[in-house]
Picture 1 (cartoon, rainbow, N blue to C red):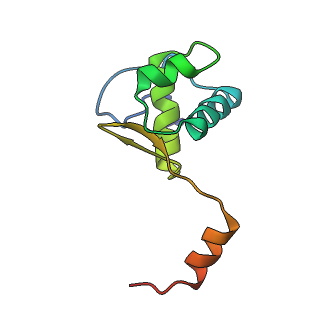
Picture 2 (picture 1 turned 180 degrees about the vertical axis):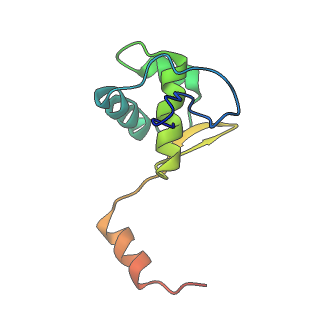
Length: 100
C-alpha cells in the first residue's frame, strides 16, 4: 500500500480492486486463534464458519496474506494451515543444528 499517493490497493497494481475494509487487531487475533486451534488444514469458507463473528471475504484475504507473509501460515490448494511453532525446545534444536 502506497500511503504517499493514497493508493489503497493491496496487490501492487495487479488488480484495481479497492480495499473496502481493513481488519482491526481483534479480528486478526481471532483469525490467528481459530487457525491455531484447527487440527488440520481448513478452507476459507470453513474458517469463516468457525469464526465467532462475520467477516468480509476481502478482509479475511488481507489477514491471510499478512499471516502468510509473516511465516505463520501456509495457504495452499488443500486449505490454510497454522505452521508457526514457538516451542523453546524447537528453537534450541534449530540454534544448535548443523546447516546443510
